[in-house]
Image 1 (cartoon, rainbow, N blue to C red):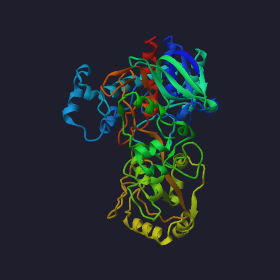
Image 2 (cartoon, rainbow, N blue to C red):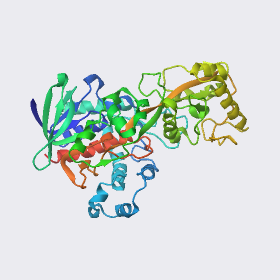
Image 3 (spheres, rainbow, N blue to C red):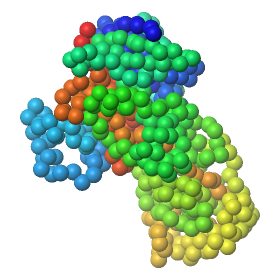
Image 4 (cartoon, helix red, strand yellow):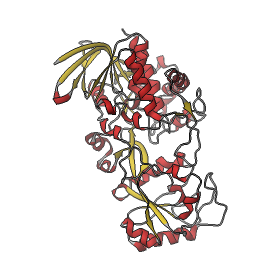
Length: 482
């Protein structure tokens, strides 16, 4: 068994772990970073994402940022407890400090630190811009790092290496080490060939993602239908949930919606990272029985795709088909809404298309006829909400409801990917993990997906930002414990 020491051990090398590591190094701490993946695949899910940031400028989050978190703060919260959150945090009872909801103080700290965090990232040569996204219609702006998440990983990893961080690859943390007082003083880990290791430190930062890659945890928290989920990219398979589990094992308070996840529609035929299908709003979605089951265009695609994708997950075998006619190919830049590298399934008639989908031809033809009869004349405006809705049809289609009657007909199979799980740990505004009594667990921090903050619906374009912000919180505070 190996015993190695540093001031801070960071578990995970995605945006959260690297932000924590570099911040701690800037504070004068020595840092060791444990990463399950090999060097070539370091960076977790950050490596594969475009890293959308919910910001209206390089210094400000969007106007609806805190409101969106408030709308999805939890379930039916006890008002006798929630109203106490309006008072100063030091007067909160322990029960409120560990309540499973999106803590307003935490969200405010997140929003306030977003701009400074982007400026901090720029100091490493990372550039940001409002680049084209995969959403042909959108309700809020998205700021992107030029070069996507990979640019974040490469810049921060290079800075960490320059400052002397020690990366330990193909090594997974398995448990926390505490002293007699309950302070976290290190981690147990396993390396190649099942070699047991121990890494001692004054502080440990859990930044190793959710449990997208752990079928046991997915089934335990989400049920047997999780079989139909798949991580949105290769990096998700490395997220086994140990960071969450090992903290719960030492009494950490859970937070976030353990039974839910961030859903994104992808083509199951593709093996590339994030093979999304975001053009379903311009046609209809049908299940394996050939029936519609949802309003495909209740809002701009960026605002409604999560809800629609969850409906897809609920269908037989967790799959649906986006059925379109030739009109969609006249939409300017329509291919931006298609990240899949697989061609559409094509048919000269609806019946022919149905045969290619293994759907009963008459069932799909009947659905299309019923839908076409419900369409009404109107000006078709594919790049804005046009209000062109069906009449007398259930479920209704609220926008872009034109008949599907122009061959060739195209279809894409669509399943729900698991971008990130919502369940995690309760932390304070310094990213310190809290126990079930509402007290800080000395020496233990969490950042990124390990922090439970999301309930019901994901607040879009906040996960990478959350990793960077809370990673910085953790690294700065951990360095101060030396």
